[in-house]
Length: 122
Ligand SMILES: [Zn+2]
Image (tube, helix red, strand yellow):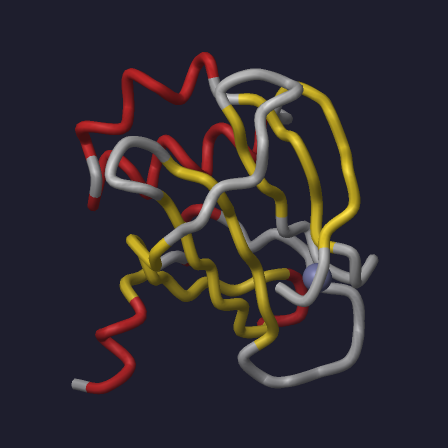
């Protein structure tokens, strides 16, 4: 992400569902944290639903590592990459990006279309 803009709010139902799905599959030790997670910022590009997390609404943006890497499809069969970044302790970013490299607005993919990104290379 190039830059972010502050956005302080609770997660939406679909954001929470996506995180619960990904953590259930890949990072179950984070599941208990998700109910308290807050959105503290979002991507500044204005064309993707990428969001950053904190434990409180005024938490600082944290350094992060790639933890979960998935692919899904949104409307019109667009391939969307989904990356969850985090610290050892908690998720800090839910990122969406266009694998097709289309310059249009990125929509959150449907949960039933998701699969681990590594399966691309089998
Ligand atoms: Zn963006």
